[in-house]
Image (cartoon, rainbow over all chains, first blue to last red; front, side, top):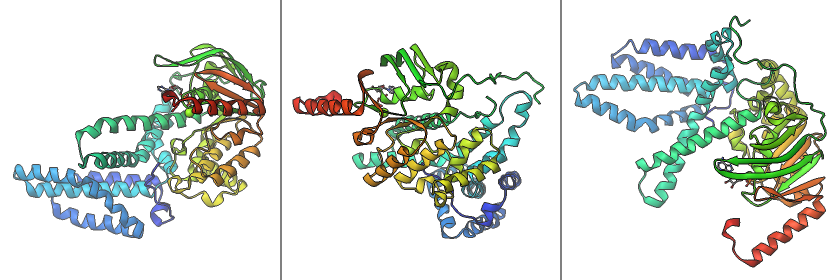
Length: 203
Length: 258
Ligand SMILES: Nc1ncnc2c1ncn2[C@@H]1O[C@H](COP(=O)(O)OP(=O)(O)O)[C@@H](O)[C@H]1O
Ligand SMILES: [Mg+2]
């Protein structure tokens, strides 16, 4: 399965996962307080600068935005129609900054560090006798396999295009859903074969 | 430290006996998926070190071996694994039975090799830092330390399958079940994995389409339409299977067999 994790030992890889997640969380809280697009431009520069510190492979990650252009286009159009074009730019810039920041964390963080960093959030469950590892693993798995779903979609699109000539169709949705479910079945089996989400330690 | 009654009360007395021989006992076992009868009337017991499973596509091989790890439960008859009834043993089975899937892409849960290996250890209750250290040691022991930091998606098919096997072996199972592990490998990688498997102390049950890998096995099961068509030593079963293939392909194109 494709992983978006970048191999390496950059300063971003060495920063603790918990700290990175916390910074992204705080940044998004702050950014949602701001509405002026002029604030987002320096933020964008900073995030892109952070990618640049990872070198060429880091900058290649920016291609991720290409998949979102349609979505951004629609948002902008809606704002233009309702006469709030400037606000539209602000919304999109904010999204771009946040998506890039979140992605930066996920490509420089090992999944087991992520798991460990998310676990304290679910710690209170343990007071009630539930496992904190289970939901934490859920979060880590979603982050891990989200890019894989994009890959399934682009494969389907190629298969469709090769026989129909057109790239997009609502007809791709049912097979996409089925293939994603099958993928999650496989992951669930793989997990179960090694002891399931709660592990074998207290059995 | 829970001040609330625990939701599930795990039985702390383990019920499986890892040293049990035979390790699997089937009595009239059947299994349906949906309305389809996939396996029926299986009665046999497994005690050999090396057991091969052969048969055409759809004959039920995968379903059969999945029962050994608790991934599937029989719905009639009785199945005992390591001396315990399969249903009761299921939560404990992954400790004793390692399962290697046909497609390495369906097995790897974590993005990098080291994490994938360490996962098995954390499953057994080893703390994260300790599990990383032991994963590295384990990879070194198997001459694979160079793979440790790499993303699994970037490995060759042979390396991926090796990592899958190691990620299961690190849990030190008694029995290793492999479902067509060589299918995506080229000839050289397939030979290497075969040699690796031969060197292991574990008991092995392996599904394979490449019959040459089963020549040195102790026993081969030939499944057909969800039942045992033949069961015996490789020198009896493999030639009979080959002869059957020759006969069928010569007679007519059987759609069902494609
Ligand atoms: N998840 C499933 N859903 C529906 N049918 C299945 C499923 N798994 C297996 N089967 C059916 O069970 C039969 C045996 O499958 P399987 O055990 O995978 O055979 P083999 O591994 O020998 O090719 C096949 O006919 C297959 O269609
Ligand atoms: Mg199969």
